[in-house]
Image (cartoon, rainbow, N blue to C red; front, side, top):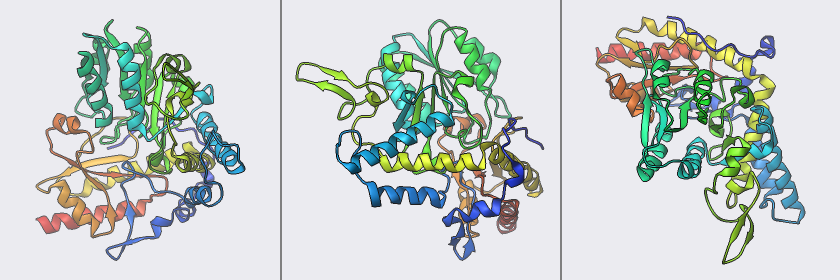
Amino acid sequence: MTVKAQTPVITNPSLYDVEAIRKDFPILQTYVHGKPLVYLDNAATSQKPISVIRKAQEYYSTMNSNIHRGVHALSGVSTEAFETARIKIKKFINALGKNEIIFTRGATESINLVAQTFGRSNLNEGDEVIISEMEHHSNIVPWQLICNEKKAKLKVIPINDDGELILEEYEKLLSDRTKIVSVVYCSNSLGTVNPVRKIIKAAHKKGIPVLIDAAQAVNHLHIDVQELDCDFLVFSGHKIYGPTGIGVLYGKVNLLDSMPPYQGGGDMISKVTFEKTTYNELPHKFEAGTPNIAGAIGLGEAIDYVSRIGIGNISLHEKELLDYATEAVQSVPGLKIIGTASEKVSVLSFVLDDVHPHDIGTFLDFEGIAIRTGHHCTQPVMDRFKIPATSRASFAMYNTTEEIDVLVNGLNKIIKVFG
C-alpha cells in the first residue's frame, strides 16, 4: 500500500539530521518501564525542544509581568516578546496583518469563539452549518450548541471507505441557507488530507465563509492563508512543538470586525462606563484578561524552531516514515489499517483481530512505546467504520524507522500473547 502526501516545500533536505534533532528534545532520552521511550503519540501532543522549554523559563525568570497595561520596564519587555510572537505566527501562515492573529487557549477555544460570535450573529432558524463526518468533537459540539440555540441545522459531508470526503455530496449540501462551512484540514484519526482549496472555492462561489481546523496540519504542511483564501483558520501550539494552553485563531479582518466580543474583561475594552462599553481594536477585542504570555512566547520560539528546520523537510521526513510504517505493519497477522486515503499525513490507525485497542496500548506501553488508543475524539468516524476504537501511531520530525521497527516487533509479540 502506498500513500501520497501533498508536495512539500523543500528547504534543504540534505541538512536534515534526525539524530541531531532528537538531541534537542530532552524527553526522548527518557526510559519507560526500563525501555527507551518510543513516542508515537504526536497527533495528541508533540514533544518540546529545549529552546521552547528555555524560552518559557526565560520569561518567568527575567521578564515576568503583565502585558500592554504597564509603564514599567518588565511590562514593556514582556509586551514586546508577546507581540513579537504574534508577528512570527502572522509570517508563518502568511496572514495580511498581525491584527488577524488572535491568541486563544487552543484550536478548541478558537472554534468555540467563532461559533459563539459569528454563529450567534449570523445564524437564524432554518439556516445551516456544514461540517464533515471526520471532524474532531471540538469541531462538532460547538456547532451543535449554537445550532440548537438558533434552531439551525447541522449538515454533514459523508466520507467513503478510504476515509476521504465525498466532494459531490458536499456540493449538494451547499445552499442559500448555508451560513458557514467548518472542516478539518487533516484528520487526527485517519490521517486524511482534505482538498481544502476545492472546499473553500466551492463555498465562496456561493458567498459562504469557511473555517479550516488546521490543528493536525500546521505541523506537517506549509500553510498560506492568503493562498488558501480561508476565512478562518485555527490551530493549537502543543501540536507544533509549542506549549499547551495556547492556540491561534486567524480570521479575515472584515469578519473579525463584524463579530461581537467572545468574552468581556480587561484589555478587550477601549472605554467602560456603567451605561456603555466600547471595545478595543483587533486583535485585542477577542483577548479578554491576562493571556498565557509564556505560552505565546514559547509558541513563537516553536515557530522559529520549525522554520529553521523547514516545514517542507519535516513533511518529507514524515512521509518517508508513514510509507515505511504502512508497509511494515503489513507483516502483522490480522492487522487492518483504518484510513487509506490517497493523501495522508503521518497518522497510522489500525485494528487487530480479537485484540482490543486498549489492550494493545497497555501492552506496548510496557515495551516503552507510547501510542494512542480509543475513539480519538472522533466517535462519528468510529461509527462510520463500525468499530469501537482504533490504535493510532502518529509520527513527528524526530521519529525514526528504527522506532517503527520497535512498534512492529511489539505488535508481533501481542499476536503471540493473545494467540
